[in-house]
Length: 150
Image 1 (cartoon, rainbow, N blue to C red):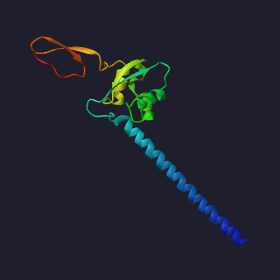
Image 2 (image 1 turned 30 degrees about the horizontal axis):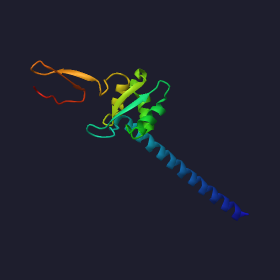
Image 3 (image 1 turned 180 degrees about the vertical axis):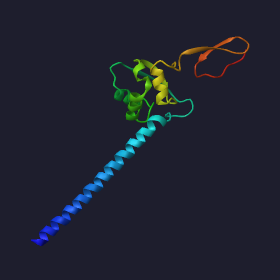
Image 4 (image 1 turned 135 degrees about the vertical axis):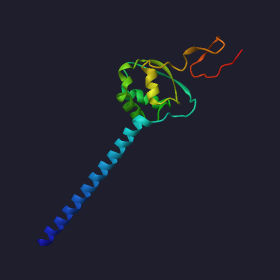
């Protein structure tokens, strides 16, 4: 009888320790994941450096943040659809977002893409007119910084 009580006590102690280890592991893993996402929300770089690829994206008014993030990941504009969805939900541009067709670049950060979708900055394909020193006007792409003098 004493042996059965001793075995039960030992087994109970082992299960308590195992449960505690599992809880500590889950808390650590969860905290690490939350920290990683929290950090990346504000520091995630663009997918590609330099000029990047221009990609056309069409978004409708009935899309959720998760659906927008999935489209952005499928098109190669972001690495993580869930992160983009979180960035969208926490963005100041969320309330100003407008459905439409946008030309975005893999060189844009999520914040820059959201600014374009909110209408705060112009799409890369819209033309601008720049005046240079001699007074003549040059029409070109907004991302085109080279001008040919005549």
